[in-house]
Image (cartoon, rainbow, N blue to C red; front, side):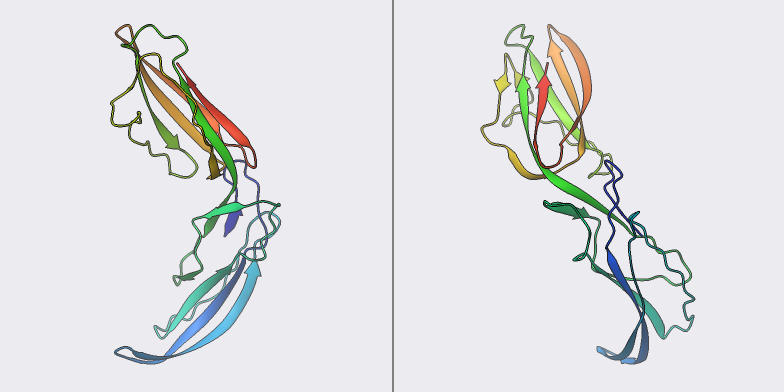
Length: 204
């Protein structure tokens, strides 16, 4: 088990987990009678890791459950987002059960889009994003204002508000720019810093 910020690889101790051995005394329809016994309690260490190995009883009447408690995590002040978390799971017998919990601090950001080298009203731009930490590397659809296909002309827009409580993460922007009949592609990576206001400048 690991608990880490995948952006800067900082680690987080204090994720408590408990493993229970469950014995089915009988099961008939929706009725069941189980005996549940706590067999181990552990937590992630200073490196954000935890490991426990035990011999599971092969008899089908026995199963194993794991529960997680995040209330004692040692994190800096501020609000954080936990990704890929769960409170409970069934352990698979005779297999390595792996759990990775990603933790991200929150930040704020806004995107300033501006055609800094405007030629004429035929200039066009559209962009898409790839949230490489939160979205497993998938690209979004192409983004443009309202229902238009592109940002057009000598466009310049600064949002009036900012995004509050957005996850601190790395985001790749790909811009497709058309000027004077020539299409150019620009790719850049922005980082929404934790506990601060970040400005993403899409200047083209």
